[in-house]
Image 1: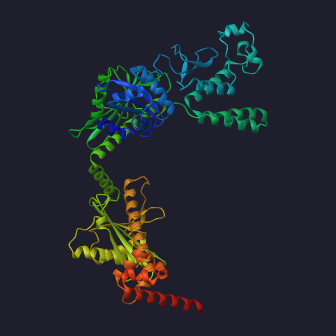
Image 2: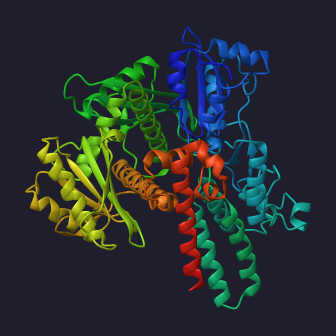
Image 3: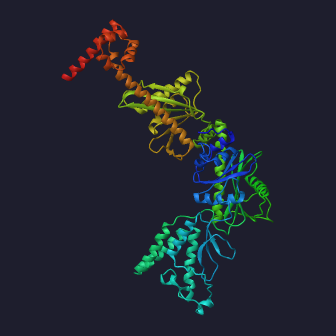
Length: 612
């Protein structure tokens, strides 16, 4: 696998999102040398750098890449359309496909007396309605086929007018006889009936599938209730076709021409702005950037500054600017600001917001990779806010009990410092004062012992204690803290396993955090680590007890002798089966004889108990 030596490229590769979109490669002069599309940006962009390239052209391209930028979209089709626009705009050196002046196909509803509906690549401003573009000819043809299955439409180029139809200038063609057209050229279909179909087609092409489906469903039900089952069946066939149709592209509607789109996001120290320029219904420019805040500037002021700067940089003369809120800038004489609530303009604003949020996330990830403490501080601050703590939870301790059928009861305490495990501070506890499997009493004992010792040794106390368990275990731990006069000095919560809800002392209603919450993930990691640590200790105790029990009962055999025997023979069974000479070689004659006699005596006792 080739090594990426450019640190700037490495940093970008680490944060590229797994979303559809377009990527742009820049050379050392800042010139775009390649534009590509991807269903998964991360996987596609990484493929240029994490494997040897077979193509010489690709090898040369990769060597010249000095910067990478990308634009996130909703679907692979959107990425294809955006790639087409970007290649036409910048004509990168290494792009071959889509570099000519061809455009992707649209479907047009002509501005005619009986409108024709057909596929075209040429957009003529004659009042006709254009829908698309579609990402391939196949998709456009599939859409047209569906529309013609739904509604019989004329395909001829006859210049139909009320006068020519009334005069009988035309005759029906084969399309009429095979029932693909209802003969409007001879007045066999009224304009009202034809326009009704055209209105539904427009809604379908605009993506208003639910509205059309509801209309057809109601019509089908009405016909069925009137016992017109054959007509209802025809409507049902149309309804089924509509239900199988899926979506439309985000980048649509050629009536959206020469429009700027801005979106805004921010942190305490930075403001992020995304700029899109839309022409003929497609995005032709996209740029996201960051302002470092110097003072406590208002978001309206920052957005106004960005609009002025971007329109100057890109020489934009757009008369309409779509924004999420009104900026603090006076451009009323040249620009109209729009805050859309729905429709195609709202979708463009949402796409811009998606890009600015992704850029913000990428910048935060990049900064956190360069400075891991920044992420830690952010996570701890989030925990303090989510859990309503008085202090930042820099030091957290979590307790868990472990016993199986009441045997070898133990407990574990794991310690996280700065949201990371501090394994040298982990502690195991043998339960000393509790008889039998009593989780509540065991929890009370270990919490008391832990903090009694910290107080006695004047060691620092944690800011947060997490108890693995529900209200019962939490109350037992709280009683222990109360006896040490630590209530109010250390925050304490319990996490229940069933729904991962968090319990507070004296509060019957638990806190339920979002499953993707960073706070919950840290607490779950604490709980899982305490459980793992406790189970490991418990298994170790049981294993030692089972393996060493027979050797422990032999008088005169100490720890060193047992270790020597088990190191050589690996198990008590093998010691029992070994020759006495081999045992003598390991521990000597005297102790060897004690071991042989002791194991024989233990075996005899087992036999006697079985016979009884």
